[in-house]
Length: 322
Image (cartoon, rainbow, N blue to C red; front, side, top):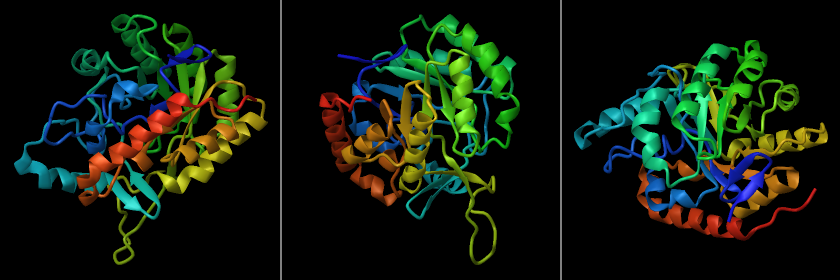
């Protein structure tokens, strides 16, 4: 069975958000760097699609690292690094990985071939229309049309300290027509998401992801120093669910008819239904489902059972007609 959202074909209406599951496969069985430990207990091939970590033309250390194999003796160093780019805050998470990734060539060569059993959305990030054209061309050359669900254009990340408003028009005009695969535009609630959604429709984008993380800041109350190495980060998790619902609803109220994959604080079946009622066509599990406090990862098999149960319900669910 499959679900068709315009040009986008998913296995069902439940996908995973970019970055939470790395590239969809891990090189290390002991420390699954780049992938939530919970993912080890969930059949990723059952999801509507797995969205890979955002990849760029060249490898990027970002604010973290491109390494994905860490011996057990180096685990303390890894956790220390995580503390500079990922922190639990209130009812969500604050992160600033800064698009750390191995680059498009390494992803397509070393990772993507091992995830062919999954339905995949390849997330692409760049700082110019030329970079997005290069990324699209490389995906076209390596992946036959129809073999993945879509490519996602991440033109809204706060953690790379770049104003994407300057390039989004050119990116859509130049890169979208070149893609052999459906294009999804990832929207930020901190940008003109209504304007960007309408611009996306004009340029032949096949769908929208709503929303990216919300720009935020936390300071150590004793020292005044930022929690994160980048100072600002992206807030995700339960804290942003009302914002995600608002954005999806406002997109529909503004007459946007493109398919919407909603994300932001989704953890339960009731969360999914709220987003469907707001106007979403599919939903995406992000940090609210895949992250846990470090000691809490010992309960990964139990977290995985909850996600498996959610998959069972979504596979049988038909959203309300609009």
